[in-house]
Image 1: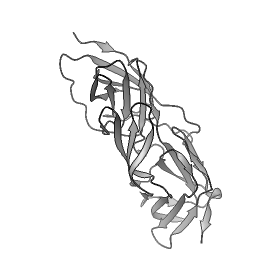
Image 2: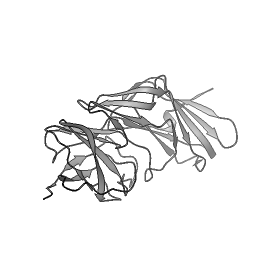
Image 3: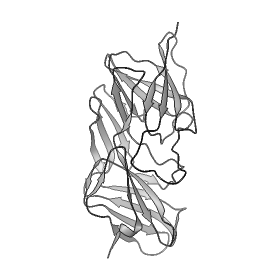
Image 4: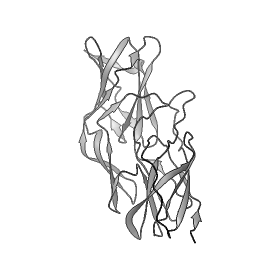
Length: 260
């Protein structure tokens, strides 16, 4: 007879995946309850990041290197949701997201996109890597291993794209330890290119742009704004911007210094 196991995880959902597949017969099943983790500041007024139909996470047991995939069961459109999957074998359990990351039982590898699209807070803003571990599979908690930089820009006219650039890799392939959640970019790029062809900057109201970044102290970040028509402008972000895992760091237009 199948065993149903309640399961609690805390995390921030920002992605969507494929349709769920039925679990193999004769396996122990687990139901997973998930809600958003706390951040230092909100993305914006009335903003709520929510799970989408078909979202997935993965869980690894210390007695089985093969990750078990858990699929959204209910709660699409909410920050709290229920997931379902086959319970992995083990006495210690490690969970991570996105589930598409490659796992060898010791580390998991994913990708921070070098090319993205501008999105409002209510839209998909990218796969925020999440990780957690614990002995009790019914009370695991996930937390973000990256942070989010929000850059508020003012201006006029339509954009083509903007480019965030740093003196170190900020996108590309990353590796996370299943033992302690330590994050590292291993095959990376120093830029993030964000397409924004349907976005217009306004002179009085700032438009936010969100970038998922590795946690670090940054001293050399710049933003290049490329309009649909006209010359590009480069802005230097303030010195010593700290990106913390699981937190939002906000930089407003007034804090940016134009690079002539």
